[in-house]
Image 1 (tube, rainbow, N blue to C red):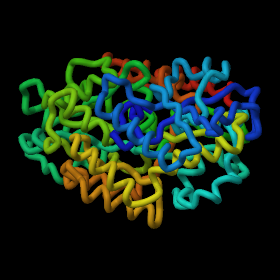
Image 2: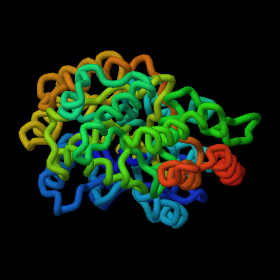
Image 3: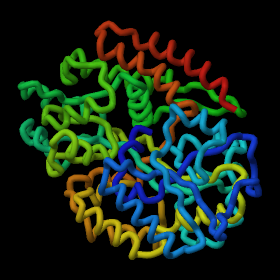
Image 4: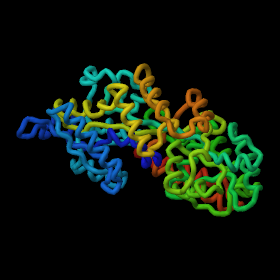
Amino acid sequence: MFKSRLRSALGLLLVAGVAMSAAACGDSGDDTTTTKDGKVTLVINGLPPATEKATHDRFLANVAEFEKANPNIKIDAREGKMDPQTFPAKLAGGQLEDVFYVYFTDPASLIAKRQVSDISKYLKDYPITSQIKPEVQRVFQDDKGGTYGLPYKNYSMGLLYNRDLFKKAGLDPNTPPKTWAEVRTAAKKIADLGGGNVGYGDYSKSNTGGWHFTTELYSVGGEMAVNNGGTWKAAFNSAQGKQVLQQLKDMRWTDNSMGQKQLLEWADLLQQMGSGKLGMYLATADNIPTIVNQYKGKYETYGLGSIPDGKGTLGGGEGYMFKAGLSPEKINAGLKWLTFWFTSADRYEAENKWSSETKQPVGLPEPAIFTGEAAAIQATADKKYANVPQENYAPFVAGMSTIPVKLEPPNAQQIYAALDVAMQKVLTDKNADIDKLLADAETQANSILASVK
């Protein structure tokens, strides 16, 4: 979910508000549908702050274009996306917008608690939605196939690496490590260059340690949690879980390839990569523009490879749902807004052209959510305006179609916090007891999962 804090310009175009209380259910509620002049007012969020002038102005221009094409709809755009710290209170208070942004981890719970509107019967009037990949659309559906929202973007993790350091260490920058054994070998070669270079970096603080543990566990074929007969149980205290921690412990203490500075959180590895001193870490593609823009990196310096071992990778994404109790008029207005950007090649062309002209990245590798004609339209527009070195990401792209993508476990952030402890311990204590660390985390995770229905 950390990825969703960093969006390209195109990702700003569809965002919306947040859900309503469980008391309001169905799609025929008592919301105020029309203004005095007969317009439907649709409240959304996602408006970039005024301090981000380019994207703020672009968003408002797109709203104006939409309203011109749909004179019976007025868009009330508000700043912000989804803040996990305030979402529950706003949800309970019914104080949020009509169409709202969610992470892929949110829909199942919102659907189960009847906190969102069923939009299934309206989708036939928006044929573009039939081209969404079924496995991605399923995130927004119940067990009977009812649909409550639309996906917009998804992501998967890969191995981000410094091509310059690879060359200096005698490694081929066009062939990044494909296994964790190869990662370990490459990391040691980079660390052996001296000069403060770190071969491989990892997180262990502010829930990011558990997040990366999950990614690494999936990569070697493990599972975080399993559902047996409606009951969730932790599954990471396994041979694969031990493999993950042992690999990190060995690189940290035997190889000395992970550096002395530990207890790292999200921005730390991006900063290290931007400084030119870090060889590799696990990341999504959108880390790259942040490294370039905030930490003075260069696009040509970075490559992206497939997740090592490739038995699975952590994926996620963002989408939009409709608060409970919305009228048919508002649901249709929301669907018109969300599908506005998917209606023609002109839309992708215009947005990629704008992104290129304003020096926003175009052509970073991300899994597409569409099939068929929509996918071809998007691919063509991306290729035409690509302004980043796509050849650097070829190893990642090559693996996208073959590596299974797995979502985060239920109550992911709480479980990640429990696993931060294990990650911290193996990276700061050479005598860390891996079996005990996993057993303790398992006990905590099972307590957390007991509340999942």
